[in-house]
Image 1: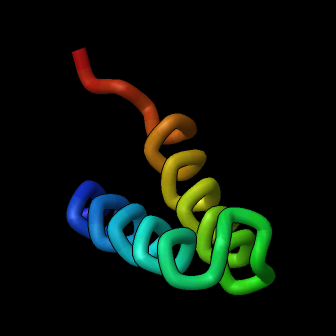
Image 2 (image 1 turned 180 degrees about the horizontal axis):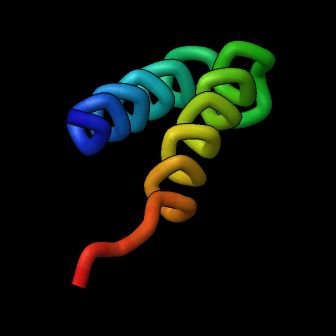
Length: 48
């Protein structure tokens, strides 16, 4: 579930970067949202 959200956000960010540039506000905001999702996965306890 979270991995799907990460992939969707990654694709959205790439689209924004292509259309608006890497440093546009919308691309940076999307990148920050992607970072939050990735941090959630990293902080999640790993089941061994």
